[in-house]
Amino acid sequence: MRAPILAAVAAGLIASPAAAQTAPQGNAQGELAVTIYNGGQSLVQDVRQIRFPAGRSRQEFPDVSAQIRPQTVSFGAADTAIVEQNFDYDLLSPNALMQKAVGETVTLLRINPATGAETRERAKVLAVNGGVVLQIGTRIEILRDDGLPVRVIFDSIPPNLRAKPTLSITVDSNSASTRPATLSYLTGGLGWAADYVSLYDEKAGTVDVQGWVTLTNTTGTTFENAKTLLVAGTPSGGVANNVRSGRYRPVPTAPGTLRSAGTETAPREQLGDYYLYPLPERTTIANAQTKQVSFLDVARVPARKIYEFTVDGFNNMTEPASAASVIKFSSSREGGLGDALPAGTVRFYQRDLRGDPQFIGESRIGHTPMGSELGLKTGDAFDVKVKATVVSRERRTPTIWRSAMSYLVTNARSQPITLDLVQRGLDWYWSETRILSESQKSERLDSDGTRWRVTVPANGETTITATFETRY
Image 1 (tube, rainbow, N blue to C red):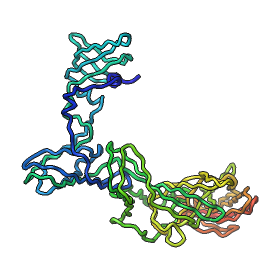
Image 2 (cartoon, helix red, strand yellow):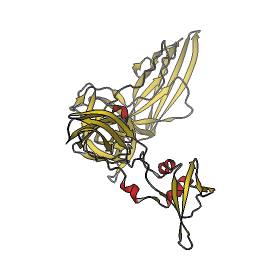
Image 3 (tube, helix red, strand yellow):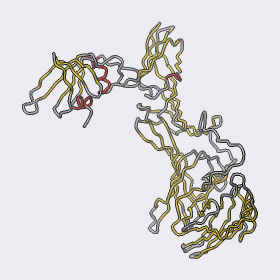
Image 4 (cartoon, one colour):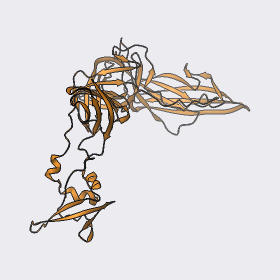
């Protein structure tokens, strides 16, 4: 059941003609420039033509963001000084109108559903606390949600209720004239992220990538015909590093998307440590809208698919598990995308036998400098499995253990595959582990892990064996 306070106005909420005539008519937006940062913060710069009378006057600016940060407002106009500023964010709505009517008298208009006859009664609003309590003459009533057509007619609109978020500024002008005034402020509610559509061609070993900027607006305000600039980066504070003293076991995770950070500078304008992505044309960013604009379109970027699997510690696996399917490519100038990549989601597609592109998986990337190597997981492989087995474990001395491991990699695909097999758990608190023997030479990644690059024949299997010695 709907709340009575809203049901009372569901059939129609009426203000008197006099009240409608006195509703404030503020200035419209002027020439807009909007800078949107990652993380939901934005800078709005609005240049409006204002007619200033000589002396002190109050100027109203409707159509500002409902999420404006009033303490960040900057106002500038020639020969004009600021005296005071206020932000009126109590917006006109059925609920707010009823709340403001407490202690006031309204008119209830009821319609008899059988005869269509209208009856009107004057009622004083006593309270709006989970329901509307009215005094009609000498009786007290509760406005009920009983399905009968009821309208509440208000005599006027309270002066502190606004149809739109409004900033009012009291200024002192040296002269009377119409001149430009610049209003700047920071606001939440505007955000952007990058989305990438990638078409992978496994046979050719390439990927086509389209980059899209996805804009979102939840400010409660539409920004008309705005010059829009996107900033890729994270201004102000970040997450503090969790630093621990002494030796500890790193948390085992699958390899991240950024395999190596690039050292190339992208051919884009920079602002401090951030890259700028200006939209080529002015655009309207409507409230409650998601808008997409293209910023990257690169074809036939060299790419290859590889399989990856991480074993955590020296433990038996009860059954084989799927390897991760990963697509690797570069953002370098030569042989890559040739651009810095703002943080976002990369979605991969691949054509089926009929030539239709089908979705095969997605991964998120962080802000990625040009020249980086990326490895993006698209999903778990159906036909490539890994099973780790503890062949033996013995205690050689009170502080030394020796573990023999076997890793069986199976491939049910009709083509040979390459798999990066990673063993983690070599650095556990106060222990140290080294490899005594291995059937294939591995590459030590760090103190906690080593990696074998395994080639598995079509419809076949390969076994890797290794013996580890751990000292406590």
